[in-house]
Amino acid sequence: MSEEKAYRRLETSQLLQQISFRHMLEAHAASEDGNLTWITSGFPVEIPIAMGIGVVYPEQYAAIVGAQKVGPDICGLAEEYGYSNELCSYARASIGATIKPDQSPLGGLPRPQALLACNNICGTVLRWYDAVSELTGAPVYLFDTPPIDDEQLPHHVAYVRQGLHKLVDFLAKKFDTTMEKENLRKVSQYSSDAIRLWIDSLEACKNKPSPLNCADRFLTMAPVVSSRGKDYCVEFYQALNDEVRGRVKDGIGAIRDERVRLLWDNIPPWFQIFRFFNGLAKKGVVFPADTYTHAWSGKVSGDDLYGSITEVYSNVYLNKGLEAKADKMVQLIKDYALDGFIMFSVRSCKRYSLGQMVTRELVTERTGVPGTIIEGDMVDSRLFNDAQIQTRVEALLEMFV
Image 1 (cartoon, rainbow, N blue to C red):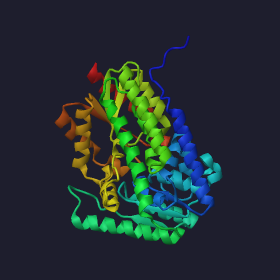
Image 2: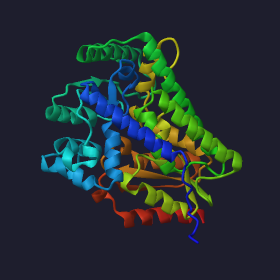
Image 3: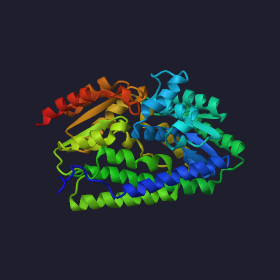
Image 4: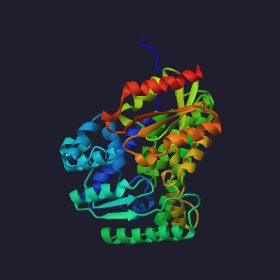
């Protein structure tokens, strides 16, 4: 008889695979019809979907590259072409797969007809898409969102809203389509319903034991990034929420022996996602919350949909200053009754990792719980020192014995 695993697999995982497969099929069909855009993760996806335009996310594709453990190979294709290994590994994976799709997982992403970038997550996206534009001939549209220090200034709000109107004009001319108000309202409702169910699933992790662990959330967040605005996305999160709430009702945790509850900060190492979190699960460590998946919480609603979209996409987590990041971590630690935190300093994602040493001190000072910083990358495993990381994590865990 085999030993019982420390980690419980979600039944919804099978449905997630179906959703992901459908998303890629739709993207290929849209590309063949000359109707596909690549978009960045912080882009107001409700707009192109409401206009009947296909969307696909290079960041999600890069995560697949990482998960299949071919990050060094695909990033290496971009490096051979002349791009520095200091460049974001999401960008390198995307550019490498565009240069040589036949050597890349899934044959690379289907060819885009337009590239839609939003700089609320980082400034790299614009130059990344400029590079892809040179390779594919697809034009780039930048949806510009000025960073927020405290509150969004009125003239910034007006500027971002004007950018939405210009986006609609760009897409209308490029794809010979129109924006119908009822379509936008329907898509926004699907988007909000999916977000609502997603948030409810995340908040269920306040319970002890936590029904979800970090790896669960990082994988099941895929549809809320790529397919919000679609009816089947709502169906997926209803199924996930039902399973999560069922676990809570029955007192079933994501791991079998929960003893330590930690917060995770930043993107995960996709090539190590199961090994890392499941390895800690064997030691009774669960991650009921993280800053990455909790960033997907903005709901487009109300009568003024353009105004709501402006507010939601301007207030993305990474578009705010250091104090806002510390505030978010402190709130999560309190709300989810966490014992400590791990901050992943991602060499590729400088926007996310900037200021983590200061943030660690602020969060510990305000909460009284310890934290540690580990270093590596989300896609490029050449930048991941497993032994060093395990040493730092073990030092943190000794504080809870």
